Image 1 (cartoon, rainbow, N blue to C red):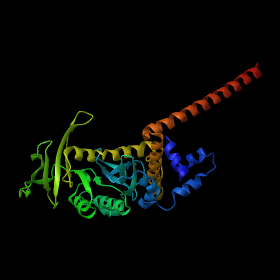
Image 2 (image 1 turned 30 degrees about the vertical axis):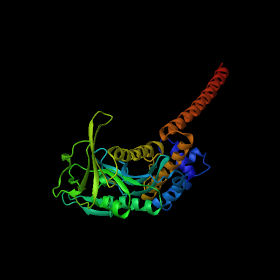
Image 3 (image 1 turned 120 degrees about the vertical axis):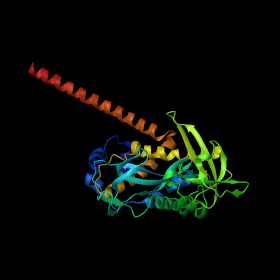
Image 4 (image 1 turned 45 degrees about the vertical axis):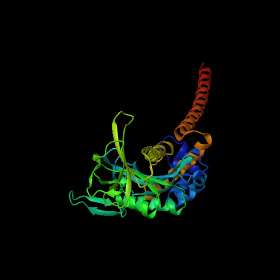
Length: 358
């Protein structure tokens, strides 16, 4: 495993069993590496065991659990139980690939994935509109979301807040976090949701659109289908492109100020950086594996590679991307020396050939 993780971190091209075997000068055969990837599928429980010691090093009572999904693009790989068509909300399009959900633990000392689930679409059905065969999962994403939060609590991870995007801000998830997990959440809600205002301890009987709340106002509200009061904050800001963004945030912690709500939710951005690091720094999308077993185990290894890279980055006091760049530059230096050696040898051979011919 350690050998494969180092290969994922240092590689800048496709990661294959043959490639790793060559890196070791065939000391490890490609068959052995293939058998390693084809072994029993590792799961979220194994990921927790791998990262548990680091979690205990960085954990904090004020920690945050960020839950989000991402799609690993596989446009040219045959469909199977985990490679299917998914809606990618980052692009607004349907893409072919592997959809996975991660629970990322975030503190001021570091972060690491402590749980994940692959969206396996094991059931086939015929779409009534198109007549085409499609796949679906036995579990909804919201059920998987709740399983990941529950696992974090059962593993005694110290955290106070749960953050997620609007795709996971269902009434069921809010009630689950508040009533069963006894945790605080900060989540954005879609503009179609209805609220009733709570003023002077009295709940209005009329549900209205959230657009009725002015930007910057911090209100107590009841969200339709949620039976407890929430703190509502409409945040308006401009993103990096200069586009005005409206974010309607709610929390079950009624004592939070606008600034605190914004600060807590901002930690969700860490999981976006995590997704980028998985794809760019630990070769998540660079494996040409073909079977469910090898694809699943490669993803598991990439998540472990992220944890390994996170620990090294903390020791080196730099971020994942800077560390990867440093590794790449050092590799280029070695490549330059090797090219110079080969060029020198070739020039000597040419000189010998010229002298013999003369």
